[in-house]
Length: 387
Image 1 (cartoon, helix red, strand yellow):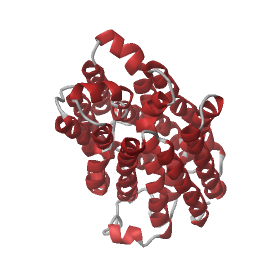
Image 2 (image 1 turned 30 degrees about the vertical axis):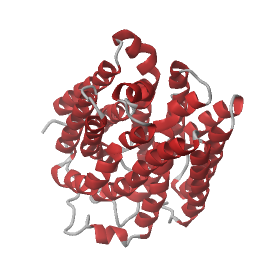
Image 3 (image 1 turned 120 degrees about the horizontal axis):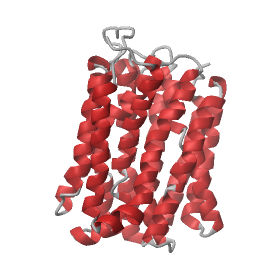
Image 4 (image 1 turned 135 degrees about the vertical axis):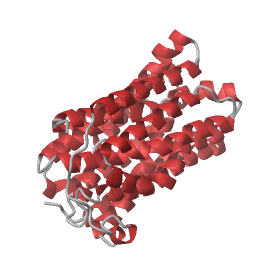
């Protein structure tokens, strides 16, 4: 069997997750052009932006069980191929339904990557290295998102003259990442999963699991509500499409710093308190983004990016270090987390689009999500510490 370093495997899963972020955010900076070209409403656009979360909900738990059963190499390789196909098909959409289905296809491949990544960390890393590795892999989707937001209107649109070619190009990058994964990645033997260890009923009886699921739901709702609409939110505040794309990349750029530092520096015994503070800071940032302009708005983008990027890594570390879960059942547990989370991930963008159609703005939606963040911050204190 070919032997791979754990750091090589971490680099590969980082590339896979960066492709996830690139394709999942390929539509957001081009909303204005796509709405005009396809002749759809912003409410319909909201459901398109949330389409992949909807399919993700339906398959994530099953995907997690598959990851546990067939191994990381095959599961992530198949997931990356579907992600690439989704990106390419977006450029061929001719109306609401073809775009909805192309984006929705992403939800069949995305779970393999987002569930497989923490399982890879749980399988290949131990002890304090897990925090470092979790922070590193989390920067992948952030950097992918930054590339999509920053280059769509400033580089690829002027270069190609078409939003269609732009999104196809992003799908092509994911296809290259898929090829690299299949050529280099290997599986590592771990402790066999005991019969029933990944069963949903058993996992839901574990206190930390159902608390993480509840908190994750709210975290995903807020994250997707903001990230998918942020370029349009900034245009609503008066920024032109190119400037909005650059500023919308700020949370993801700053998030890289947060993801690389917070999971590594904060010990296990302080994670629940850190999570509480992150949610409260996110609530303040969301309120400022919805209600202010100028310097306070820009400051809020920095704050949001820094505190939010490590919420999921922290929750995943709590989950994998819960003795009743561990590495063997991490695929199934991660599948549950992302299933419940993407219910929020679908609801957030859809609700924001509907509220925009009703009110002509984003303030009500952003302030409402901020209130939910305060409640979840307090709920973090109920998590059992993993160390």
